[in-house]
Image 1 (cartoon, rainbow, N blue to C red):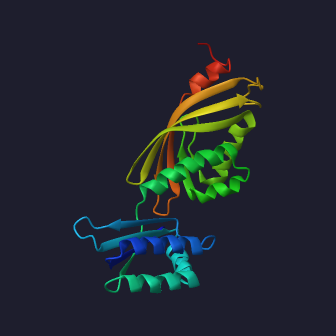
Image 2 (image 1 turned 90 degrees about the vertical axis):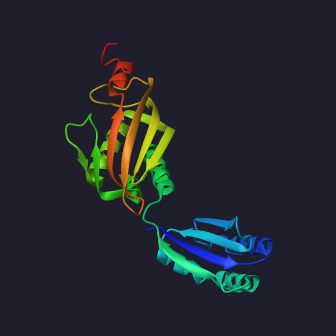
Image 3 (image 1 turned 180 degrees about the horizontal axis):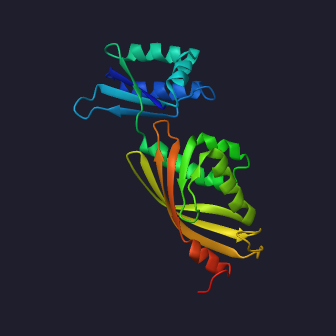
Length: 232
């Protein structure tokens, strides 16, 4: 589960505090595990500064806090503040930006990741896939990998993400699939043709950012027409 720490302090030396944060980033390069950091200033009180630091998990944040550079920067930050800063630890229960990023990553992995075992970095073990072109829904990582291998066996392809909308625990992605027909696909021998297809997928996420369910819609009829399997 993603973890966020909020550091709340009062200081009249905001510029010095910003320089200190830059120094922390530089000194912990290669060791710092924070994935995102924001420093904000209260519009109604210029001495009130809040830093929001994001980590992949609480355990990772604790390892980061044990770095000698982090300890030194903390002591220097306290010296810059008018009073002792306060710390609030938050487990993130919804992160739409993370969900969108992981959805994008899934399309990249389907198209180009050599080790399909790594799909479990973005898909939950019991992932449930709804695809109208399949007679039965796809359940679990093994079935997902077989599905990906079937498409890879017929095409060299890539996805272009055209649009994404996130709300709550769901992300809707509109995409364009561009491919070369290089192998057998549904009984069609390879033609070497350049083909494309548009589609849209809704993914449902759990709190840690992994997808648990997906609903696909795409122009399979148009694809088969390009391959000469249907008329028109």
